[in-house]
Image (cartoon, rainbow, N blue to C red; front, side):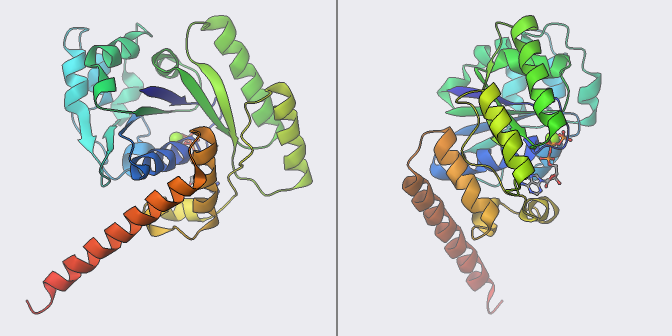
Length: 276
Ligand SMILES: Nc1ncnc2c1ncn2[C@@H]1O[C@H](COP(=O)(O)OP(=O)(O)OP(=O)(O)O)[C@@H](O)[C@H]1O
Ligand SMILES: [Mg+2]
């Protein structure tokens, strides 16, 4: 089981969108995925269609070490996709008193989640407070979606320094994913700067700026089922192939098969309704 924390000091860079779309893609390809919403804004819980559920992650943090594993297991919810489950968040999470930043890791280990999941993806609020640091200790890898701007590059450099100086035993930044890409000279120069600063970590695939991502959230749709022909979907599939070392063709074929399966189920349901 691989545990990935999706993190960036900066807000609005696409962390939740990345976490949600990647979790859905991995689940469609057949992996068993647990998404963890570690952000009191609970955007991931909304994006994956469950909304706020009780118990949720706040209850896990508020539980004793003995009872927390059972609370975590009870917090796991189904989403609209088979293979994709979520632990939801709520506004109260910002009041969670995270005294021990290794707590989340211990709880995950105690649940032996590897029996049930291939991937755990943790979405985080912007910043680097105790909640985010808990996810750093819980994960083995940190993925950083980013804009291509001066402050974004500066922010990642600072984040990398903080992680190595203050949390040397937590997960490490392994991938940096350019988002909102428009192929301008300016953006390309920031992408180059990032590649020099973080050799081998910046993905070759940059996610284009595409209004499809806003539509997904507003309409409660799934990128790979409902907006399969968008540029956003095409680039996300390339990204999955790159990040998780999967054959691009396999990813396409499995997602296509799932989409067709879903369409025929929907058609069958509509057909059942005729004549009633
Ligand atoms: N590639 C993209 N092109 C266009 N819009 C995008 C793209 N990626 C994300 N967005 C949109 O940008 C907004 C911010 O994205 P998102 O919520 O994923 O960022 P975030 O980093 O999780 O924000 P926060 O720091 O508040 O948690 C959303 O409205 C989302 O739909
Ligand atoms: Mg977010």
